[in-house]
Image 1 (tube, rainbow, N blue to C red):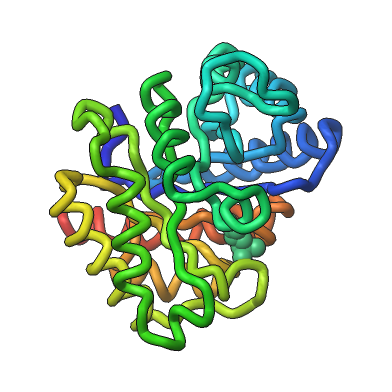
Image 2 (image 1 turned 120 degrees about the vertical axis):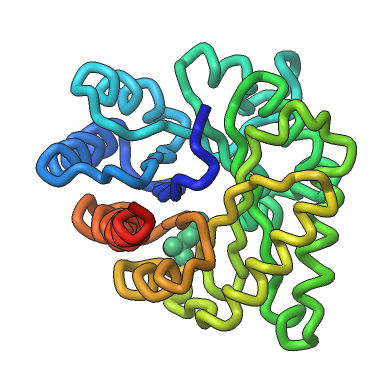
Length: 265
Ligand code: PGA
């Protein structure tokens, strides 16, 4: 099983790149990782549904050391859900990971807390590793309501989840005001929220859960956030669409963890 202490960097390609471009990006990531392996960091790419099969094939045939995930999944296993994709279908394709409750799904596709919880349960029940996304909008942050907001998102998504699936859950804190805006939460804001999330997760029975940060992550801010020992990795959007900028984030994380491993030995 995955070492819970190993950091994780995920590239969320959103609705970008057709399958030819996606394969190309996967191959470029492979070349860069072969040239300079990320020994301490797990790397995952999350292409659009239509690219999953091609990207997975190239990852397998070229032995590229990355996991592959989907951006969303329907909570039902099959049936009359036109346009949707189920966890069983993803598993059959060899997909390992799935984002659950990304703020863009919550805001634009009516994904409320109940649906997020059902989706999370369907994902892990089918053996997918789920990245549960939480984060507050700007006005909630301005009113100082962010701690309560994300605690409630976590509680409604995780309450009642069979503890045998806890090891399949990763949490990504993505303040909505920082996604795609060029604004990043300050190191202090990430520190406070990360420790709040960790204690909330522990109360909910998840003691060894990776907590990622997402929201306009790039190599520079990733290096300063990870150096504080605050997070177990990153969920990267815009910067994951180019192999060099994505690998720069991976590298920032990996260098920091290599240093920590050296200090320990
Ligand atoms: P961003 O997106 O890095 O472009 O802000 C992050 C995300 O939405 O996961």
